[in-house]
Picture 1 (cartoon, rainbow, N blue to C red):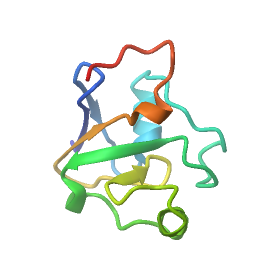
Picture 2: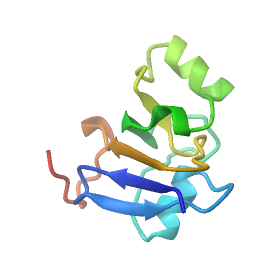
Picture 3: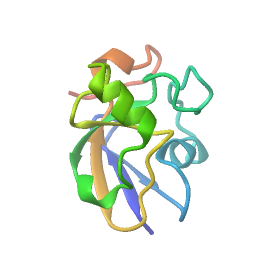
Picture 4: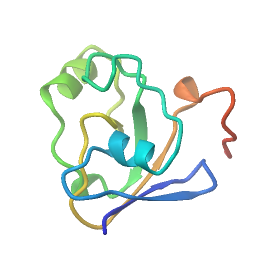
Length: 107
């Protein structure tokens, strides 16, 4: 099964079921993850910085491209509510700006 590795959360390996967004997989694995707009691609609180495996993710959505053009999403970041992984392993990190105060993160 495709896997998302969150490097600064342990690291934590999260299985990503076919067709699921990264956010849905993260939540199904029992992890708390910010998503202020309810996973509709209308904010950037669910973003993740992709460290490896970028090409394994679905292409950026219109919402992601719009945020990137506005400077609100870095070129190495994706929205977990918009991204899907169909095969392989993606390594990522939670950006400091969206880290939750009650979750332990490594640097």
